[in-house]
Structure formats: C-alpha cells, structure tokens
Image (cartoon, rainbow, N blue to C red; front, side):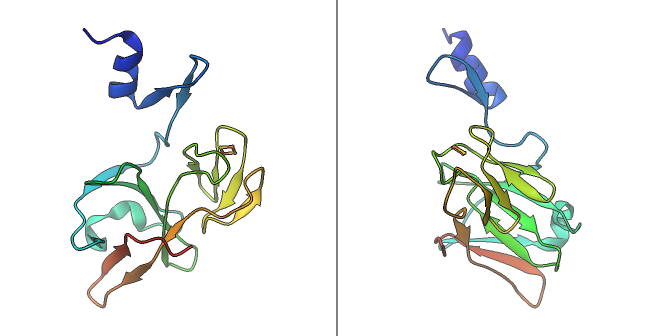
Length: 146
Ligand code: FES
C-alpha cells in the first residue's frame, strides 16, 4: 500500500523535503511535452509547439531517458535557448516567471538566458546548444555547452 507521502510525490509532482515538509518542484504553469531523443538530439518541429510562438514562450520537455527536464525558452530576439532548470546553488528546480527564472528554495534568480541576476547561485544554468534548421526544426543537442 502506498503511503500518503509517496502518493503525493508520484501523482502531484511534489517532493518531500528533508524536514518532512513538501516542496513544489518545477513550474505548474509550463506546458510539459514528452520527447524521445535520437542520437543525442531532441528535434522539435516548431509549428507543432505553439507554446514557443510568443516572445516569452516557454516549454518544459521531459525527454525519455533523462531524469531532469529541459526548459526551452523563446528569447526576445526570436531565438531559442534550452536550459537545465536545476539551480546551480543547491539543485532545486527553478520556475519560469515570464522574464526570469526563480529558484523557490533560496531565491536565486536567472535571466531567460540562464545568467545569474541574483544569488546565492554564482553560476549560470546549464545550457544545451540549439539551432533552427531551414525547415523550422529546433534541434537541441543533449550535451551541455556551459
Ligand atoms: Fe536555488 Fe539555493 S537551491 S537558490
């Protein structure tokens, strides 16, 4: 029989903190899409991802075989950035708040490119290289670039 804590963790996407309190993980407002990487790459046909059409578009990808999600964020110049949402301070999952990403644990704040705006984190979020092909496919390489 599944206990209450395990049930909450499994079905509501929250993790029990070390002190027994519950900590929300991830960002409930982001659309989550499952993807299957091929040869170390994720390919998104952009016309199938309307979440990324706006200047502040955001998407949470859950890739098969990867424990952590990837955030894809549209930049104001129309380009795309793929980031690990794992805070570089102590590893909580940051949340997207339109023009920035905020860590719910100790308040570190990053810009939409992953650069630190406010600590205690000192390092940028990990970025994955991206490119858009001539036929509108966003390719995300699953090797960290920073
Ligand atoms: Fe993100 Fe501490 S884990 S600010």
